[in-house]
Image (cartoon, rainbow, N blue to C red; front, side):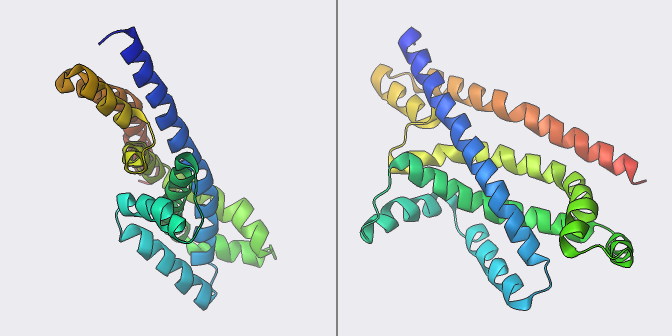
Length: 213
């Protein structure tokens, strides 16, 4: 392993972080919409979003990325690997975050919503000022846990030839024939990204559990 190999791994690390950030950000925005649709009380909308969540939770992320990149190309819509992976991760994240936040919204005591209705707050005000701030706090540990899974899931971007951290490690390993060393470093980089988030999620979970006693 020389300086060029380490720089190449760092370039792959950069793309891993960017992919996870894009998937989490846009998936979070779409996931909020999914969560609100799942709790809006409109039967057909709840059923549709439940089916959407079921599809993405019931199929592997690898297959989802494969379908977005290769499946859309079959109908004439050829996407750059970067764009395809970003879309795949966004769809994947929106389903999981939507379900996490749906559960958090349902976990907010019903009395809060009833009190807001008694004060004549409309739906937007009830969700924005009363329900969502409490639901966000409840969802934090699970949301952080999903972010850890999303970071590790970016390694599947190699299926469409995108060079993130894992693929960069594989390419270096094929050149210098030291797979244990290379993937040991790759694993250490993933650990340095994910371990602090895991500890933060566990800390928040303990903190919130003590606050509700």
